[in-house]
Amino acid sequence: MSTKFMDWCRDYQGAISFVLIIMLLGFAAGISKACAQELPEGLEGENITIPVICGDTMVMYRELLNTHGEVPVAIGFTDRNTAVVWFTNEDRTTLSVVIDTPGRSCMMYTSTCYEGDCYMTPEENYEREKGKMMEDNTSPKVSM
Image (cartoon, rainbow, N blue to C red; front, side, top):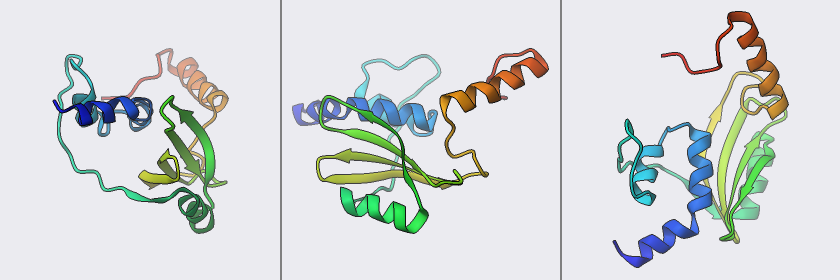
């Protein structure tokens, strides 16, 4: 592989990892394939096109606030001057995920949710899942 591509993977490793967790494998296979030596059993690499909106960081933040009322609620930094920022509005009915580099940002994902579901604090999620576990005596997991 070219060294430029490998440098890019190293520069964005933290941001890529954070987005993968947030998207719950929504597009994990393609990015994992690009930056991992070996994939876990059951996962496969894909090249997919993901449309993104990029521009000046201050313009992006101002538009998310003015257009959707969204503010940053979670952020993850890397040692390569990159951050992944989760935005949501006050009612937690809209969300956007943005990757920041110095002076430039790209919105990777945006969506609407049921009221309150676009972002939960760890405490809120704990209480929500604890209640489910007590009701049916099972662990919190995705139904198949």
